[in-house]
Image (cartoon, rainbow, N blue to C red; front, side):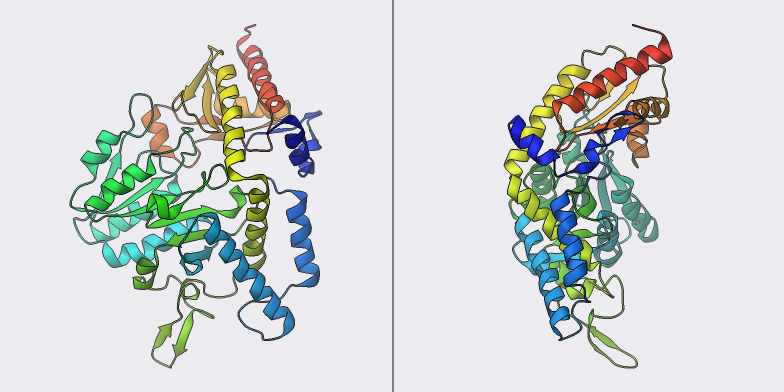
Length: 410
């Protein structure tokens, strides 16, 4: 994308024009949450003002129109990730809820004592704790795929850890710390050869490059709306229809039933079976608006531009000999985790904030990975398509000023 196109996009995000501590804002915390553009905000406001009603209940005009928009959003999600059927799309409260749903339904039904659940050491706690706790309840064996020396997924270890006893493999599509895409299709192929089901955490993927769940042959795929321009509190679980049909409901209540008697009940068809109660209507519709916005720009254009930004940042930050960078140096995504020697990550993040640079510091909900890297926490800068080279230059200057302030170097 050229400078004019980026300027046009950035104008849709008025928050980027504000000052932080008197400095230009460089928002580099997109892995935590993305900002929402004005066109989506206007559409959400218009829905509240003209179309707000509950869904799947009333036969009046407002209820019908709200339901129509809600289900249209489901169709947009299905098309966005190339699901075979819109009924394979379950709306949840977020990626965390989606992963818990799979563990509490498919996992509870299919994991038994001495079965194996295989994760990677880089998993976010949301894709670790549900499986850890399931394994403890069931007496199953939890195994972790390690990293190579270059801090990428070790495919040789994938082949060792996935065995005939493996029933579930849970893996991030893109790491929220190491700045890389995992070889998902290769992992899925290995897992399927032994009959294992693969659950993919796509939270850090869907707004950054095209996703095709049929091509990768994922059994389950999960993500959150707030990491792709949509409101908080909305998420997606994609599951292959034959798997979802076999699973029992996760929650019980209104709208997820076929028939209820005093002592028994039968369940609605997909996707309603897993959507008990009043859903996050505006969240789902807002997610549909977000997909429209991303399509308008083009996911391939977004991927190409973010790759350019990532290369630019890597070239700049590699030259700082007082910075430790985590993850691979080549084919790095827009997530950069790093530490300044002898300076606590929280001090670095605070110092950068004083200069208008918004990053995250901490263990990033991945403590096993932190221990594997030999650190307690890192600083993380994460890019999106509305960032520009000026943001990166500001970050590099801020890192240098922070180093000089704390260590007296120049």
